Figure 1 (cartoon, rainbow, N blue to C red):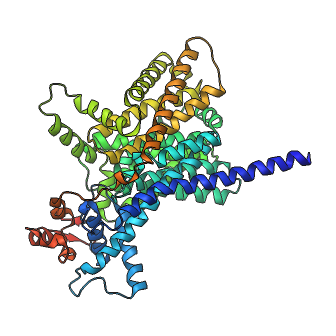
Figure 2: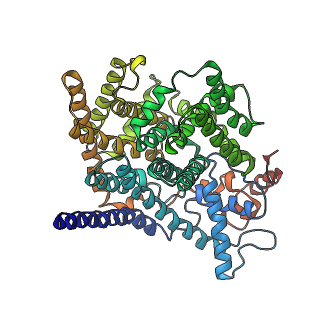
Figure 3: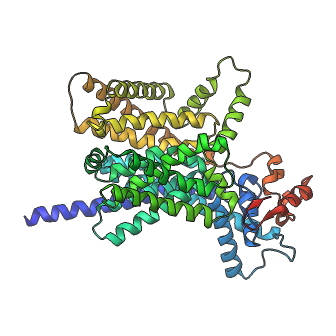
Length: 538
């Protein structure tokens, strides 16, 4: 017994050591890329390095932000914090009497942000290990997931450009871990605290980059899967017989937070497109809260919706400038306003309208997998098999039988839908949105393939899914391995110079920078004086 106990402790110690080694290694590629591009001029990547600086300067002088496409709240606040710390520690004056930032200080501020961004990219990759373990993927497989992600273009393209795709994913990873793992805690106050912070992280992810919300079905599915899935299913079964009054109450409680937060920017399109989406978001968040806290009964389900709704209203309506709020509550119609025109513009003369989707699929798979053809075939086979399984097992009277298996098939369909959505506006920065769930789902399929067995046709589908998932894991690992020999290629040395004159960072505080020499700077910056301290553009 003593020997067995010692072996068990030794195994645990080794596993902890391996965990820390994996976490350390996950930071290496991002730090290397970040340091390689550290000494670029401050205006080498004006979109969006200079943008967050101008937004932070606006916040510092008590003026509302002027940019809400993302909405990009994280880097605006971090730049503001960096300026405060830098000025305090160095005892330097960052701006002149007119509120214009002094050029000699910009290089240092941008370098600080570049280092922070590189560390955050490494942090995103390292979180893939505890996330995989929480989803019950064995340790060795979780190491493969984390390292493959760390050396993938999905992470590395974000290192040398200070943007919010990677930030939004980090917040969602933390949401899944905090809310999902809180279900195992016994102390109620600690459980509630983690759920509270987790839900706030979800909203912060949306405020960083609204596009991350297209991943919300997978986020909720992952969170609920980490919780006790069997208890979840039995509870849902027992609550399916909701009365019409109870269903109406649930619908209202899921709708009201968005309606309050979105006012006054509500029109017919928002009600048709955005309201159903936010009903789904609020219901999904409430279910995660409900099961993570170990609640039961319809009354507690109503409580969970009220809890989520209050946090949503406090976060979006009461705590942030109006322009940031509009950038989130306007989703998904806001995103579609940018994505569809861009897609149509690039494919207006194409004979086949779907060519843009094919182009996006080719672009993304080629960047992330090697060999491309084998990976593309494997992914298409997985999509076809998943669709076939769900269609042939579409029995609403027995919706929750084989729920784990169905969840995996549903995940694949959702991943393909995210790839389609990202193909409407093709950019390598969006790879992080589908690659992280793809690599985890593929590894879950291999786990499922190894652990369970069925018979007949279902066994054949399982074999197809497992074999194709193995191909995807191997081809992604090969591509990431090849990337490790050429990390410097991920440094974006310089954007076209016309980006310096982009109107988004033309604020009067930037007059002494290279943007201040652009034609039309005075007129464009004067327009932003019409933004008040809270409500944004008038």
